[in-house]
Amino acid sequence: MQLNNQDFAVIKQALRVALKHDGSKQASYSYREVLAKLSSEPKDRSSSAHGIDRDGFRYDYDDAAEI
Image: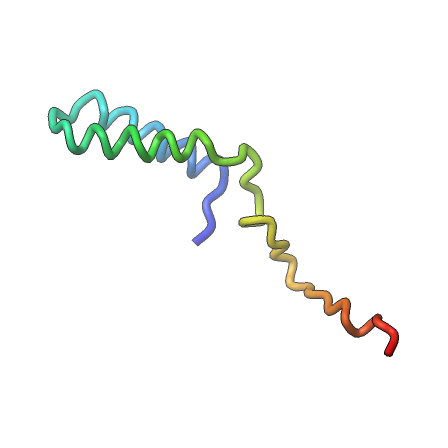
């Protein structure tokens, strides 16, 4: 499953709302932890994940090597 920037914004907002309305310390800690992880993620979350290009093309550079 790939999430785009809008998906991450919705998740962050839901976590902020949950922080305000949940009385459980354990749940609040979990929400803060996830929010911190989401905030530290790269801002560009377009179609590529972890630097892997998902355009369907793969290159085998060994074919170009001289033997």
